[in-house]
Length: 192
Ligand SMILES: C[S@@+](CC[C@H](N)C(=O)[O-])C[C@H]1O[C@@H](n2cnc3c(N)ncnc32)[C@H](O)[C@@H]1O
View 1 (cartoon, rainbow, N blue to C red):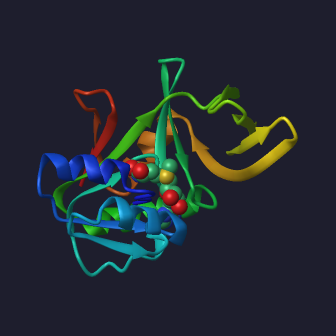
View 2 (view 1 turned 90 degrees about the horizontal axis):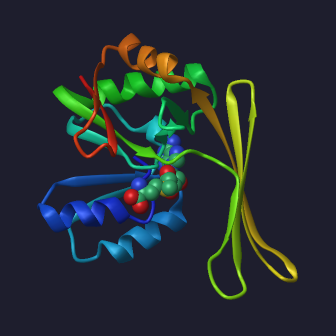
């Protein structure tokens, strides 16, 4: 969910011929995914995952920096970030994901680096920067690309944040078991 440009999907399909449905609410991202994955048979759907019809079931659902992500703060605490509108909306999404999984199916969420302010040159004249702010249940993030003359492009996101205890509780509340972090340390895994 949140297949984006299909980076992880491409890597998965290089390993095994998985049957994959990729969902994203951004048409622009899906156009890029379509190009990247043109050699493979992937079903791409332009849809908000929250509207996914509950009439099929999957062995696993993966969010790799997609609709939900998890960060490891200072290598101590896990935190969950959700694109949902608020905490109740997030629980509603988890209920849907639970219903979309087969029994014992896995919900796999990538673990990212800490969200923090930083800036770095990405080419000779273009700098990328990100600015994080926390307020109540939310984290906001500005992504900015600029050059000497000023800002070239900006994007703003607002994510609802759960601390580690709230995160685990939100999954167990809808029936998931927490299996914890996988052996690669790159994914947090929950099971129906
Ligand atoms: C950082 S990208 C994901 C990268 C991707 N998983 C990959 O492997 O290349 C995040 C994506 O999640 C999508 N997204 C976020 N919330 C979503 C939702 N509720 N439904 C569908 N797509 C969503 C965004 O449009 C964006 O394309």
